[in-house]
Image (cartoon, rainbow, N blue to C red; front, side):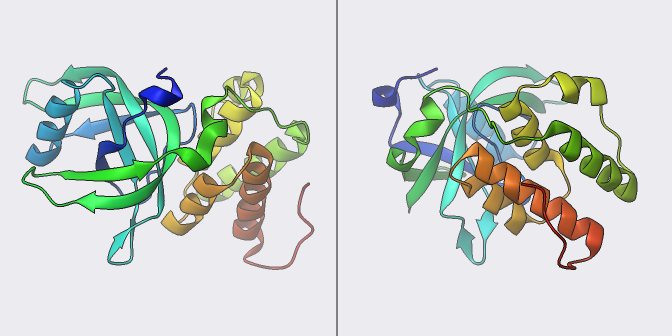
Length: 208
């Protein structure tokens, strides 16, 4: 993983609604549009191999995204690319550069997210039994399935961040999860969103 002084101040960005990359998580992406195939080709030529995942917001882009390093890629017979991004750190968008490339590049600021580079977070307040009970009800209501054995064995951060990325929340809710300052903050918001979905917005006592 690059050290802080190796982090570039300009990276290509990939706007994708509903897709957020959380610290130290991995995200698979299917690349097929010509402009993003060009972005991937150019990214693989750099030393950092980073792409910034960011959500569209209104007429522009969200203020905060997360950069991932291309850690694996493969090409299909018809020229599409399957890649995996390994999250490095969140960033704050400074300015989208005007240029001649078919994809967006942006100047970014990493300084607000030093904790992302400091290693995995733990969440001492996480009550797995309560969370799994709530999650089971939510998954049943949404017609979803999960690997409960894998979930039970996952570290706190991997569990909470994976759920934040994968569960079917709105783009705005996913952005709020991404911007949560700490893992405990993200877990509390995650629980609140699940409860809200289950109870239709009624005021219910939330898990802490």
